[in-house]
Image (cartoon, rainbow, N blue to C red):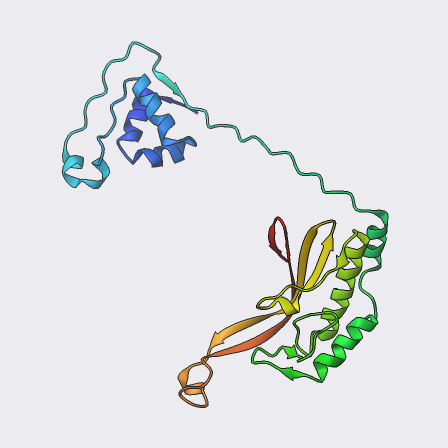
Length: 233
């Protein structure tokens, strides 16, 4: 960008230095350096916060023996190279092309039986007092889709060399699919998303009734955890 010393002088006295930098596409530090180099007076510190200082006459633009034009060039952004996605084994690609199965495996079928004969918690999720062969967190509406997705994930993991591992202890750990491969431990959870809304007192059955109402969305989410952090999709 090309402008004269007087243009820049008027600019730095019309707005804060950070705003000048934004207008010119550079940092306020770069603007200050140009002003110092070309002997352009700048507002004192606290100028834009003090009405008293702003009422004072601004100093005159002094003479300058150098070039009158100012050249300010915004930095050119360097594009980061795109990361090349890893190549998947042929067996994985074939499995991806097939998509989800039409029916669940025997293990998921047993999970379905246990959940349907169990109970429904306050969130609308099906629960069972017995360990689930294929743990998922779903409602009656999404149970079949959740189990088909779990079967697909387990098969995909096996093609990558992962095997089912012993489940970890702790809150919510009973509903994770645990995997391991050469010392790498991971876990996957398939869960239906729910929304929560506050119930007005007038809608509560009693004054001490449930404060929140949970509504299912019908959307399944997958979260996985491994040695390099947590990811959600």
